[in-house]
Structures are given as structure tokens and as C-alpha cells.
Length: 180
Image (cartoon, rainbow, N blue to C red; front, side):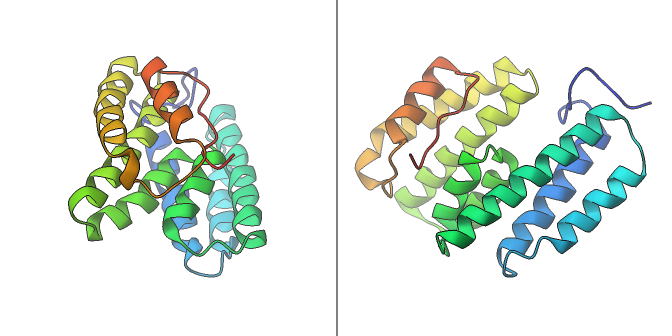
């Protein structure tokens, strides 16, 4: 049995594989008309394995978040990857936020690259917090805050920037909403 007290992607290879495969499949579908069929098929395959209740709960919760994020993106016709990442954040899809921002980061340069890196780190803070890794969360938060504060005027606008900086500084377990 692989099960722990929580879905631990830091110390549990199966949990990490499930998260990575589901998350990357979902992100890939953002560019394929948001067709969640491949994601739902993959989730079904994982569920068929009957790995345990913690894995099952994670998969089902993830599917709900994916569907909700897809609805938000579709209804608001959001085609820009930066703003799609903010929607994913607001649905607490931090690994997926990281994946979308990382693809932008790889093509960016200068200050824009730093800002994207800070937002990737901010998503990483909440991934670390979910894994009860306070030391990793604190280290990432410190780096993210520094860049976000020093480049506020350069950051593409979103309403929750100040809340984000404050929550990172406090290592608030409740992530702020960035678009409201």
C-alpha cells in the first residue's frame, strides 16, 4: 500500500506521477479546445487501479477543479496563457499554474522572465505547503516576494497582486484569489 496521511507528492512517487500526468495532460488540453476527454480517461485509468482513498480523493478533486477552470476559461474566452495561469491559480491548480507559466518563462527575457519566475515560485510555495514542507515554502516565498515587490510596475495587472505578496510573506495556508 502506498498510502500516507495526505497526498504527498514530495515523498511518494505514485502521488507525484499521478499529479504530473494528470496536470500535464490537462495543461496540454488548454491548447486543444479544452477537451477534457484525455484527462478524464487518464483519471479513470488511475481510479481503476484502486490505489487507495487518498489517491482517489485527489483524482476526483482534481477533476472537479479542472472542469471548473475549463468552464471559467471557456465562458470568459480567455486565450492568453498568462491569464489562463491566473485562472488555474484561482482554482488552486498550482502545479498546472506552474506548468503554464514555465512555458511562458522559457520564451521570455529580461524583467518579464524574472516576473514569471517569481509567479512560478509563488505557485511552488503552495505546492510545498500542501506537502507540509515549510522550509521549502519559506525559501521560495522569500525569492518570489523580492522580485514581485521590486517589479510591481512591470507585472501585467491582476487584482490580487498585493494579497499574493502578503500571503506569501505570512506563508498563509489559504492561497489568495488573484483575479478577484
